[in-house]
Image (cartoon, rainbow, N blue to C red; front, side):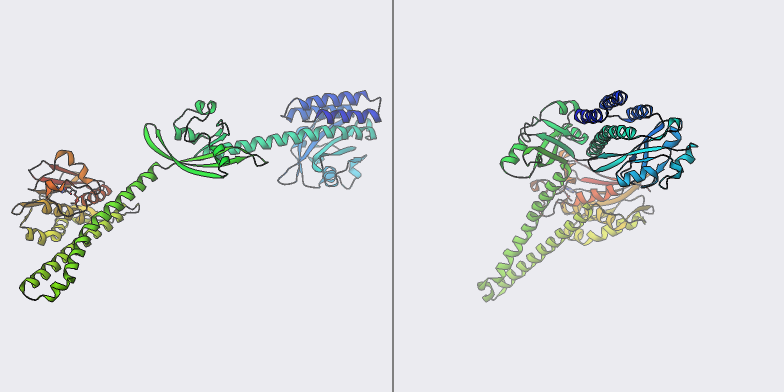
Length: 536
Ligand code: ADP
């Protein structure tokens, strides 16, 4: 917008030079107040240039602006009978008299354009108009050229005069300032819109507060993260003791950023948000507020907790057999024992070595289970499915546990109706599932009892089952036994080994196949585990 000062100094200059120029003054005053009235210049500039053309008795007038990206001259306004056609043309940098004015920064006044080597005929060709006289002055903001004002064809076959040139130059001061302000305003507005789009496109919540905790800026994601309505956050001060006073705290501690976690209830769910706050300074370096970026890390925090639980439970499991291995090893190293001969000593060495071997084997199976389990927990855990005969799956699983069952005095029986049917599964992993179920059944069954494995089918389902006559599982435990590391109290099961991972592993594999695993049991009357798979 032209300042009052620009306008009055323009008028003073004009009055000094032309004390009797009321027409021009009236036009400048009108144009000045028009330009002052709005930042939306389109229509105002056209009116201003119509006034200018009238005041100078010109056939047409125009404003050409330099396009920032290309340097081309583009018609912002073109008045007169052929205004619309004129606006369709754009001039290359330095093209025509207008281009020359921009390049040289000085006005050009031409009596017969057709005779002027700087003149371009491109506009005339588009408009079917013949340009004769031309007056063109630069639009300058400080030393920056932003375009030109041009009037053509003074009526009555007259050339433009010194007085016209002075008048157009004065007008150019008013218009240049107004156009510059409007462009600046548009730039600021566009930048603000871009910032808003970027902020609202972010998945992280953003909150900008001043040193009094008033909210200056927020994005859409923050509303969802903090579970508050837009109106509330716009109107209210930040009212949370954990984040209020942040800007002042950063200033006091002379820190530029601070990070901490916040526990919230979001949609009634416990939620963990990671907050990174950075200090906001004014150009002189004073602290004026803080910018907070909040990210929902609930899932990450849960995984982290699980990882820690896993590590501590695993270390605990590994320590028990290791302690007994170390204990027996130190017996073997015992000086007295080594120097003793005789049957007793031999027996002691034999049983210590056997215990070490047994515990070592157990340790190895534990580690294998752990490795399997961590492999199955990875996101890229892939199944390699193939059609396999049901009888083969069962046979391979039985093979894994046969000698152990015999050693424990447990009878293994088959109860299948479906041995010839085919299952479409990851063979290795499915055998592992069945072997795990058989292992558990054998582990918990008293000697002399029977463990049965079988398969049965419906139209679209295939069901493997493993049944035992062991201690059974109380109803309240039946869901929990599928959780990682969960074991029923050993006083009830007499269990001495295991990591509590077998059933969790089974559930992972079965659900990856789109199936489910369940148990039917009651304390004292055995258990039946069923693996229910969809038939592909
Ligand atoms: P573990 O390696 O400890 O056996 P699992 O995940 O395979 O771990 O089993 C979890 C718990 O479920 C066992 O510790 C045991 O308490 C119970 N359980 C599993 N199978 C049986 C079964 N056939 N009879 C009785 N209890 C069982």
